[in-house]
Figure 1 (cartoon, rainbow, N blue to C red):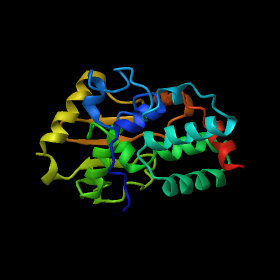
Figure 2 (cartoon, rainbow, N blue to C red; figure 1 turned 180 degrees about the horizontal axis):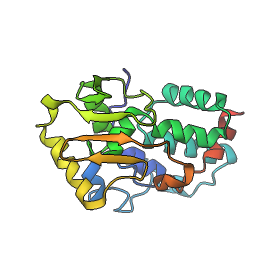
Figure 3 (spheres, one colour; figure 1 turned 90 degrees about the horizontal axis):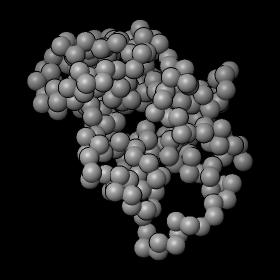
Length: 211
């Protein structure tokens, strides 16, 4: 499976917002966005260039794609699937992204970042309704139970990540039992419920792919 292995903080600087690609590090002063560093590149004048309509659409797509840790082909196929659904394409796209197994594992606090969640899934540490699923793009359905395999419940990384559950809880469309290391995907979230994406204008992405 293809994946990006380059410097991740470069993405945050390019999008000028924290994408939470490194978990706890992103909440500290080490985050380049918190240090108010500009976009990557040697020429500081690049940050003042006027952005065209196409540039705005492209940046919005790149921001959402990188937030969920996806490559271009995978993201485009997800968009095409959303375009076939009866609702608004932009909202359906976000709903599909939220239903990805790696994202649900991250939302359940089994991992501190989506990258770490994807690794847990591909290494076979996650069960869906009692069966091992190692496909990060697997689409979770309402009522599905997501759990950590019994042999994997001793992993320190998962235990440390679950500490976040006691601090801030989880989203309303998810129910988690931190002691049993399992949770239930209660419902597909509405667009307005995904507060992490308040600054995302998904309509620009639809317009980009409609060119």
